[in-house]
Length: 454
Ligand code: URP
Ligand code: ZN
Ligand code: ZN
Ligand code: ZN
Image (tube, rainbow, N blue to C red; front, side):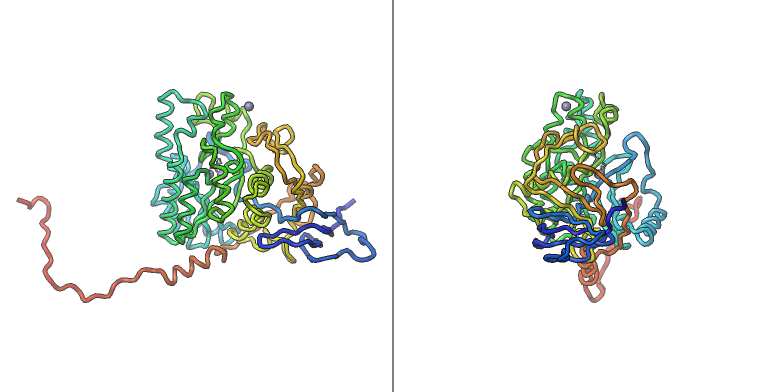
């Protein structure tokens, strides 16, 4: 039987980033058609209309995970060309932005000899991003210091996963974060710092925002839900499964600190940076931590971990939760209000959320392919009951009903108002101008050329 093309989500509390209201949501052809009280006709549901009871539940915009790596060839599997291809790169970025709907580009300051860009290259690419109306994303870690630190750790006989954190401490992340912000600001390009993992880097972003810089910070589920003490776990595979860059921080107060900054808008969005490797793949680095493929899970866990750590803990309300899990991302990447909001005309990407129910995260029950979960054993309040993607129920009562290929690429336009209004205005009004002066008419010393000095 074909799934009904119309859905009525009844009596839930509809939560957007700015307000909440008890309302019915009518969905037709993948889009929200009506929002209001008592939308069910008096005679009951007509044929073809499926009613989902959401009384006592929350109705949230579908989460937008700002950062994932699916089937990503990485660390040993494949190397890539670098950015030294000059104008060809420049042209490709323009085509991607103007014709293919790509409006963000990630640059790496880490992974020396693989992806790492030098300052002048960052300057050039940030300038192009600004010219074509994209947002520059940056993986902020000092690749040179990491390379030197790694040599030092290996020379000290530290070959295990703890070496991964020891060779790239917080300052390595904070320095690169400040450098990226300084370079982006020099060309008036908006900047988005991916996977903000440390207190020091988060402070740099908070300070820059207070200084008026157009910069956004993205903490990830891993950094909000667990910490880097796991690198010292005696079980090698356990420690290795936490290896990612920038690393989780051994200071156990880091997640709380990042959550507080996320709650008050010093940090803006949340991703998962989902990039998973099974134990046998992590084992490529069993004798040398620099060879452990970097990456952790989170795509399935992100919403629950953030609800538990941010909303259940009392740091955020339900509206800020929506802001940091979907709305802000939709605004920055120019998908709003089609995505990131439940309103008439928006795509029907909706989660019916039970804030009172709990579930325990485990690799034994998760739906991710990887054989380890960094949140193993975490009890989370906040459970998705039904997930709707473009008007179709794709998950319900623990069962996925989605077919491969249902996902759709949404082209994104450049020059997102949310970030570019300020950038354009600054271009118009903040350009430096020369001081008008009478020309200097006095004496000018004559320089002696080399070799003629006595
Ligand atoms: O360790 C990580 N973060 N793996 C994914 C690649 C990246 O740098 O985001
Ligand atoms: Zn990265
Ligand atoms: Zn273990
Ligand atoms: Zn990543």
